[in-house]
Length: 123
Image 1 (cartoon, rainbow, N blue to C red):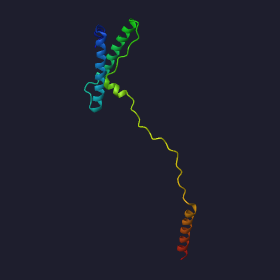
Image 2: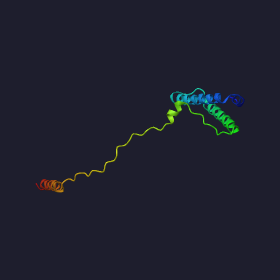
Image 3: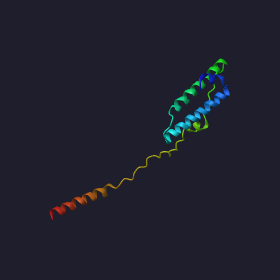
Image 4: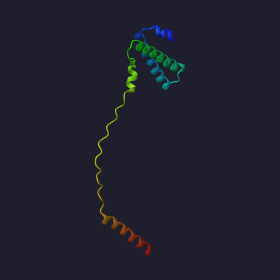
């Protein structure tokens, strides 16, 4: 879209065009993921046209003495921009002490094994 065409349109039409072009960009990105895009220049053309339209809207707002109002993104893009809620982690419980094994039983088993080895070597 040429700059003359953009300047000749009303604000409402321009906002609709921005929404349409953003939807097109979204669809192009989705298409690029699933299959090769035939005309990759459409990405750049759409982005540039959106920038031109937003520039003209901002110029008009400055001329009127108002701050530029942002153009809302299409609903499909808003859904992607929302942060995904993380699953809540269960609260960490205090570390439970491991039950200690009885020391004598452990040492007794070792002693028994050693004595069996010694008996086996001697005999």
